[in-house]
Amino acid sequence: MKKISMILIIIFTVILAGCTKETSNGEAGAVPSTIDKVLKNKKLVIGTAPGYFPFEMIDLNGEFIGYDVDTARAIGEALNVDVEFKQFGFDGLIPALQTGEIDMIIAGMTIRGDRALAVSFANPYFSTGQVLMLPKSDTTTTSWEELDQAGKKIAVSLGTTGALLAKQLFKEATVVDFEDFPAASLALVQGQADGIIYDEPGVRTYEAMNADSVRGVYDLISSENLGIAVRHNDLETVQWLNSFLESYKGSPAELESFEKWFNSADWMNDVKEEE
Image (cartoon, rainbow, N blue to C red; front, side, top):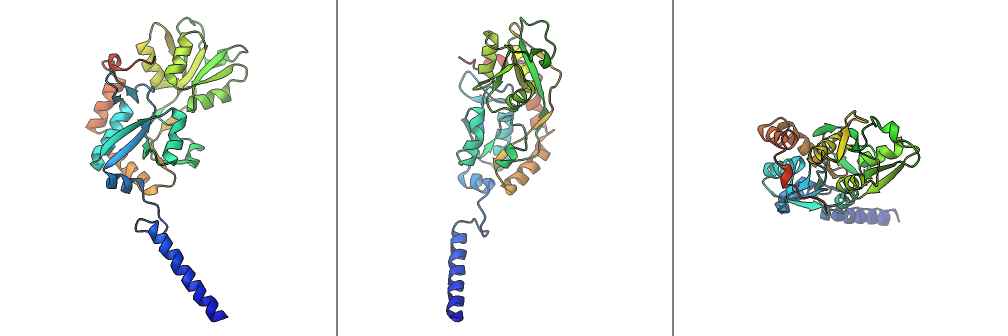
């Protein structure tokens, strides 16, 4: 009996080993990294959520533009592959990554512990924070605390750090979710909300484009880092991205992109307005 049992154990082990090899990429039990997949397909698929100025937007020709878009194209150039962008609502990005519909998320996504349970982040590529945006007609409010009153409405972009923060901060005011920042901003301008909590660069850009209708209060309510997200525990891709970012940040290409999107207003008339 012992001899027969040992033979069965050996056969079972061999079968398991064969199954492991069939599902691996040269390493036992390993799932092919995103980098391997991208190099094999000669294409990098980026998930983004246009409307976060000046990180990701759509121009009048229907093309994706912005600081994050430049970063994605630089990654594609470094890998010598084509780059394809897919548009989602912000809260749809992580599910799209988890199902393999996209290879990476580059969408001004804040690195957070709860998100890190679902995706893996490379090192930060940008630091920012949340601020308050008000209708221009409100000339007296100077802080978010002043809006925390019954009857006040705070507009937020669904799934963003600003939305999470607002729901933690406001105890009396009502926090209302919108599909994206442009939709929340439109509600503010139309008098359907009393304020917005959103990332500082996006608020500054929106105010520059709509100075007659909104104003920002630029005392940071929070401080946070933005990161590129990849499939959970894809350490090979995270390590590659970290190496890439070390060489890209501060490079002539990155500095040119930063200057174009953050220190110039020339591009603003080329951005598609939300309907």
